[in-house]
Image 1 (spheres, rainbow, N blue to C red):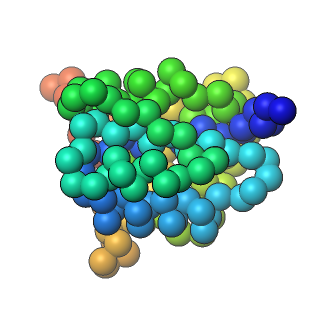
Image 2 (image 1 turned 135 degrees about the horizontal axis):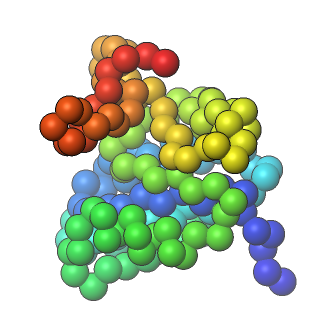
Amino acid sequence: MQSPTPQLSVVIPLFNCLPLTQAVVAGLRATLPANPPSEIILVDDGSTDGTREWLATLRPPFRVVLNEHNLGYGASNNRGAERARGDYLALLNNDLVLTPGWLEPMLAAHRSLGAKAGLIGNVQRDARTGSVDHTGILINRKGKPEHDHRLP
């Protein structure tokens, strides 16, 4: 019997840093609701620190994609995204500290924007100080992307 289609697909590229990966997985387990269902796609980019062995112990909702060699962050995100089955796609880093309620404001923004919604991000805070690290990306006058530090 096939599992229900997930509402949310989370993609996380990995390269070594096993303790960070274990922490973000624990954070996902603690903060994602069981219903509607979610899938978490972990894309290992050629880790050599025991990450691959640890990933082999995970069970659904976790799915693992193994790159034969290091393809880089963008390619790993793309490989995970092409396997995603959810209505929503969340691209996360493995060094995030997820707090309860991290997902709900982004889903609420999507609901309120409807068809006008594009890419929706979060307010990222420094885990040590709680200060705003960045609120998204903007394109400066030179046409270069940079972090936005203004609160919405």
